[in-house]
Length: 450
Ligand code: AMP
Ligand code: ZN
Image 1: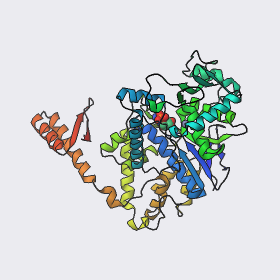
Image 2: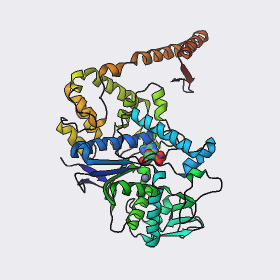
Image 3: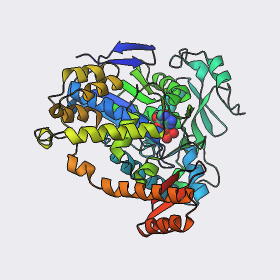
Image 4: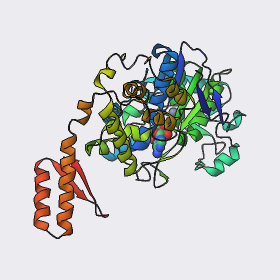
């Protein structure tokens, strides 16, 4: 079965041919560890987890190398550590653990390698030195900048010319840049920087820019030419465009990644979910409300991976109804006999694999599951990272959550009839069980465990 993937570089759905079928190599931009992952970040992680499962199925689990990095040196991290008044190392260690906990709750498999940027600064410096030597970068006022004019194909990924790119994006015009599109490879340390974010370099003490981090980590683990590079579509420009330019210029003759895959945004009322817009919901927010990680995962997989997906309560509700339906019919014995998760599941229906191999056609794959026989479901579900528990375990704790919802509804009914004594009694009853209520302006009530 031939895998077809939409390649951002060519803007076409292409037949995927790995450089080496015995070692299929994929790099995906991982989290910048300054705050808890939100559902938009989670969508990216979950989508590439499905692609990883599919590659493992097609080529064998031992023949896929999947690298997802941890960005643990970045301006956002410095700013967050300062705002929290804590050392950077404490912040990054804590957030990395949160990330791992949250994606594990979403049934995400660990990647083959998960390099941290701070452990690869030597490689970043080596790449920057090559760029300077090749006339692609210059040192200026403690910075080192990549000269975009030195790379004729700049803009090939975003399919725009340099001038259009600059006009369409916020590009800062600093005095140390020769051209406004030049981007930072190395930046000087500030006097009040935390020592753990300061590294020695031939250009003085400082830290690497974000883009060079991914070039260094991907080529260290996957070589100068590898198969797939993934990330959210917000990373196409400038991050991925810059990764291509600096990698190809530092490693002459290399192609860097052959296939570029970009997942669509998770949106809220049509707007990208993001930290800066403040419209984000973290994975932990939902887990704390008693929503199962697998329900969140399945909701995130409910549309084409490269189209926007709008997050709302109906999406979660529908995901839960479907998973409940399937967990009611999966027969416990059909779980037995499946090899461990990391190994290739052998008996998956061919049409399921064909749907996923068609540029990860998730709606089609899920449609097939709706008409599948109960004994086929666990193997199909494993391709999507769902239905891997037994039903008893799935429905355990369900009654507790339901009774909380019932009490909340009873309290709302009491409030509507102005029976405030009863409403307060119910609030106290829930508080005694460690459930905090939060009334929202729209008349509904949220709850969380304290
Ligand atoms: P960040 O931590 O912001 O660098 O993002 C980590 C990953 O999540 C990147 O691959 C982003 O492209 C992706 N991402 C961030 N926000 C969203 C969103 N709203 N929808 C989909 N992917 C996103
Ligand atoms: Zn990256």
